[in-house]
Length: 333
Image (cartoon, rainbow, N blue to C red):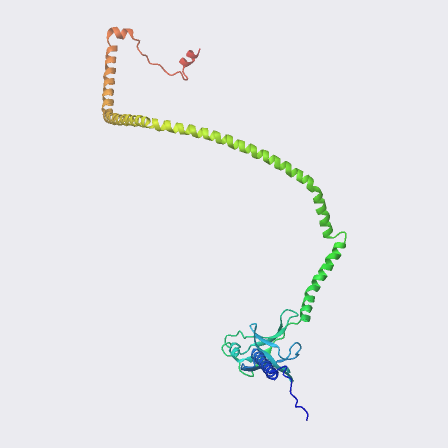
């Protein structure tokens, strides 16, 4: 009779351990899947929003949707429609209240070669900012300028500059151009700089001498002014000392002048009164004088008629005027 097979007892309980390992691995995978799903928003309520593009180049399914730079959803699906490509984006419902009606959607990149994302720009109109978008609403897509368009703009801006540069180079190559003439004038000016520098140094030296002379003159004037100020101070002190005496003398002189003026005024008044009385007595004195002269003439006539005196005095005779008479002719002979 054959012997019964007995399994080796080298790894006792290995089945249980393997089962426990696979169970732990399965639980880990499930946890990681649930965590990734949570991070991807699988357990968050989403609101579908749509927009249309004529060309879906650069837009991929699962692309991040951002609001003010924060990720709020992803691109869920894309399908061709009569208006172009209809793109559905799924946004977390708790961010919908921050997206007002009339907002726009654009495709942006982080730099020129960075990751692309859908950027939602809220409407700045205050009349629509208070009303958020609703589920299934369609937003306007604003196409951003691509690299080719930027290159075309740069080309359009650089082309006139290059033309002007080429024109300037052509003018530089001409011998009678303004630039070459200016360069020749500048070279000539540079050649004259050493002599100009020498003249400037001489002028500075002369200026130094003038400054020194002016300084000396100012010092001399200062000393003279100090001496004059000291003299004026001494004169002021002497004047201050002699001023009371001069004031007393002036006061006495003024009093003497006042008394003399009073005396002159009184004498003038007395002379005026005497002159007035003389003027009043003038006619009477004149009449008395006439009477006196008349009496004197009568006395003289009477005296001449007295004998001793009358014989001594010649008797006045009558004479005729020598005009046309014979006597005038005799007299002339």
